[in-house]
Length: 286
Image (cartoon, rainbow, N blue to C red; front, side):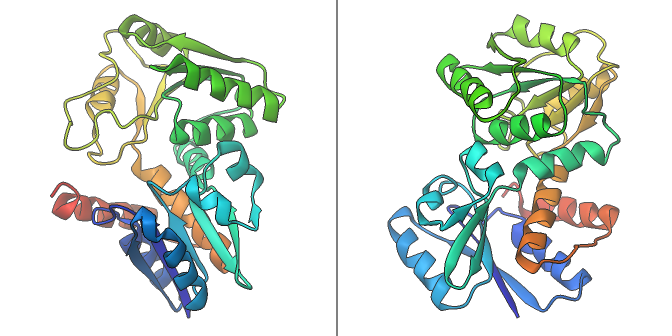
C-alpha cells in the first residue's frame, strides 16, 4: 500500500487529501494520503516518523517548502532553480525533492490551449509561486518576461537567478503601481497574479483595476479560494481568457502522484473540478 501525506501548518483547509484520495481510487492504487500538520519545532521528528513508518512520499507546503531542502539527499533541477520543494519521494530511507508547481502551472495553460512559445508574460509577485511560474514559462519557450513586485530587491534577485541559471535574457522589472500594472496588462500576452491578493477572506482585494479591453490577453490567478477573484472577474468582463488557480493545483498534484507511483495518473477533469469546487463551498471558507 502506498503511504502518502501532506506536511505543513495549518492544513485544515487543504484540498490535497481529498484530491489524492480521488486519484488513488480512480487509478486502482491501494493507498492513503494523510494530513500531517506539523509545528516547526517538530519537523525533525515528523521526517523521522515518515521514514520509520515506510511512507513512500509526501507533499510539503507552507511554511516548510524551503526548510525541507536541508533534509534532502537529492533535489531536482526544477526545485533547485525555484528554491523550494513541494514534493518528496522517500526511497531506501533517503529523501528526493521535487517541485511540481511549475509543471502544474504550464499544464493549466495547455489545458486551455494557450500558446506559450514566443509569447510575452507579466508576473505580479516575485515569491515562491512566481519563481515556479517564471522558470516553467522559460522552459516552455516564453519570449519575454516582466516582473512586477512591491519589493524591487526580491524582483531583481529573481531576475538575477534567471540569468544565472538559464540562458534567458529578456526579463525585466517594473515598479509596482496601478498605472504600471494597467499598462503591462495591455502589452502582454499572459498576465499572472502569483500573490495572495484576493484570497479568502479578503475577497474584495485585487492587484489592479482593469479599465480597457483585454480581449487579446490570458489572465491567470493562482488563488483558488475564491475561484472567481475580483482580479479574474474584472478581466473576464473586459474580454480576457481567464484561468483560476484550481487547475494548477490539480496538475501539480497529478505530477506529484506520478513521481511517487511511477505510473501515468488518469482522471475525469470535469468531475474532479466539480468535486473540489463543492468541497471549497462546503468548508474552504470556514
